[in-house]
Structures are given as structure tokens and as C-alpha cells.
Image (cartoon, rainbow, N blue to C red; front, side, top):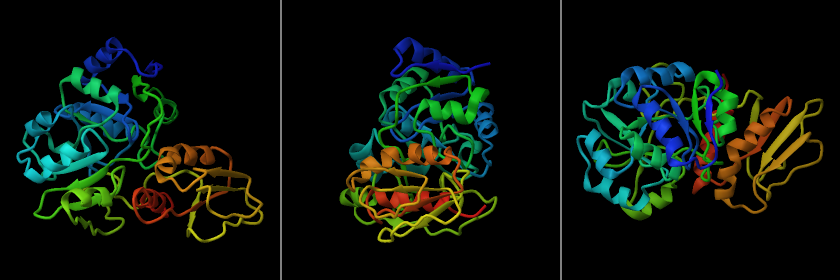
Length: 330
């Protein structure tokens, strides 16, 4: 059975149909400003289990719960401290996820048995209308097979999941293009668990210094503190090699090589395909085009993809995180 596909910026009746599917325990793929999500009613353990089955996602990897308002967030967390309110007032709706102590309303399958739940209010109008009409907290990881390149269009969802999800809301390309930043407020000092669409500098300008998480790569089947923290993630099927920003990119003799770079980076002839993310070093443009460009190179029948690193600040921190995990060994 082909998935029901609602066109770009579907009308409220179409979203209402998708909302009813969520309430009935079905999965719905929908757009956010970061990437497309695969959503289920977060209070329904069987529906949430279907996410893990469809994606092939390990149960130790927690999910982010999407909500319509801050009041809705407060219904599923046991504490919403002033620091969380400050961050919510500044960055919500938007690409910031907060980890807060959960109430029992959220089943353990959502949080991998951990005491905190990851929550955010997305900025995309289709996502917000879906959440409003569903009237439920919606658990939603990226709508793609686990570990592979994240989807930033409805076509990416169809290509990755096929008929495994029977409802896809098409809200056009995602304008941020990388996943949300995840910030834990479970302890006295905020901890950055995953860089993403809100930069560390933007957060620190509002609340002061935050600590970066220190964790062991390849932590096996232990519960992860946040989504996207496994050593290999966001990965193309084509081998990916990451080089430094100042290094001239060289094609490998005898190999079909692709290049992923900012327009300002240097390379020599010999590449079979080159994708320049932006004519200038605008990291917001690079981020918005990043996953789609990586998919394009991955589908080009190449032997290897070579990618330049980004600056280690702002959105570059998130992009380099994705490159590092995408290039990690199996």
C-alpha cells in the first residue's frame, strides 16, 4: 500500500486526518524546521514501539517528544525550572530540545528507561498544526532508516521508508536542515548533549556557560543520553572521508570521487561530482543544504565522498558533529 502523501502545506482537513491517525496509534511522517520526523502518540507504548520497528532503531536510543505549547510540555515533565522558561521564551518554537525530569505519563520506551524526557516545540507551521489537532505529545525521531542520512524533504522519507509509513505530510524542504540542539537541564549546570540548529554561542548569550557532554564513543547497548550520540550516525552508504578546512581536496587516483564543500574551500580537478553548499561561508545555508547534498552524492555511484570540515563554532559545530559520525567506521 502506497503512503498517503499530502502536498506541500496541506490544508487543515488533511492535517486533521493525520492527527486522527496519530490518536489511533498509527505513525505519521511530518516536516519540522530541522528534519522530517516519524511521529507516534508518545503516551502509547505500542505506537512508539512501531517507530523502533519501522526505523530499525535500537531501544536504548531515546526519542524527542514534540509538543504544541509550553503548557503542554509542563504536563509531561515534573519540573520546569526558571532556566527552562528562559530558554523556552527565547528559542521556542525552534530547534532546541531540553531534557527535563519526566512524569509517569511518558512511558519508559520513549526515554530508554532514563529519568529525563527530551522535549521541544517545533517551528514548522505544519508540525504545529498537527500537534494542535492531535492534542497529544508526539514522539518523533528522524523519518529514515536508523543511522542513515536524515530526511529534509518528503521525497527523502518515501525513498527511505517506502510503504512502512502510511501517512506523510509534505511541508516542503526543511529550512534549518540539521537536527535540534539537545541541552540537558537534569543537573545544576546545563549540559550540551548534541549540537544542532541553535548554536552553543546563542544559548550561552542567554544563560551563560554550558558544559559539553563527555561520553564514550561506541557505548554499545547502554542507554544514550540523547538521540544522535552513537559513534556512527547520519551516514551515507558511500565511504566518507573528512579533511581539514585549510586542506586542498584531492581526488583519489583510480576512484570515482565526490566532494562536499563550502564554496570557499579549495580543490583540484579530478572529482567526478562536486557539491558546493554555499557561494559564501554562510553556515545557515550550508546546514539547510547539508543532508540533501550528502544524499545526492551518495546516489551518484561514487567510490568515496570527500568532505571539508566546517568552522568549529556556530552551526559549524553541529555540521562537524554530523560529519564525524557519518564518517566513523562500521
